[in-house]
Length: 318
Image 1 (cartoon, rainbow, N blue to C red):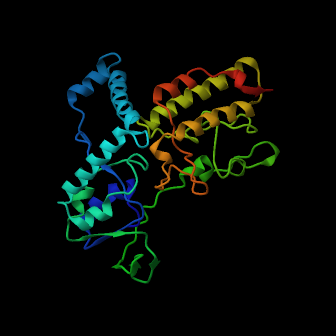
Image 2 (cartoon, one colour):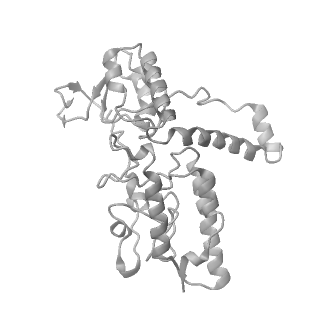
Image 3 (cartoon, rainbow, N blue to C red):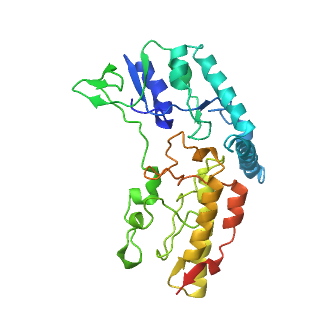
């Protein structure tokens, strides 16, 4: 398996159960967190309440998100006491899970602070490393031959199946799967390269009537729900469409000054976060420049307040 991110975390413990031998090539070591209620079955009583008690489901969702946001806001700040305390706890957790095996600890404990990369839920990953049919290679694969994979330090791993758990084109956003053309025939991927930006993560100047969800700097790695963020964006986009119908506009395009001011604020806010730490690589960042282009450096409530009501003065209209 190539990679040790969220995909590998999900599949490797199951592959280990049936493989003669599993070799994992680790590019970037990850932080793992134990969540006691992970995969907890929602009880029949709770499901009944969600179906029959008014607003119970909304309250349940809110209190879950509120708890996550409260926790993340403290540990997200680079160099903070909370971040350092979390790092100490996570190191202790990894050591305990691998029985203080010095070789595994050396390979598995990251050199960067927690939150800098995506936090992963320990899906029996750590204990899997103790199994006799699992080998963790520190570093990316160097070469693939007819029936082996060669590691960076001379490791030779016999292989009949190779799984690429190496992520996705995270900083291309919608342009990874479609072509978007704006005014003057300019493609979106060229217009915002190499550091994608968008107003509220949804729209750009010179791309009239174009909106997207899960755009630049809307990934809620500060805790919360991507689904919630998409719902918030969907409401905002719906308001813009309704205004066009109501007022008879054929075209709206966010003003350049509005877009630039918003993204200047986003860039400044990112500087205090652990995501911006230069000691780590992650899919949060543009590979060309190292700028954090994915994550939202504010709490859910602040983003909600910014998008609650579309201000049509932010747009040029025709």
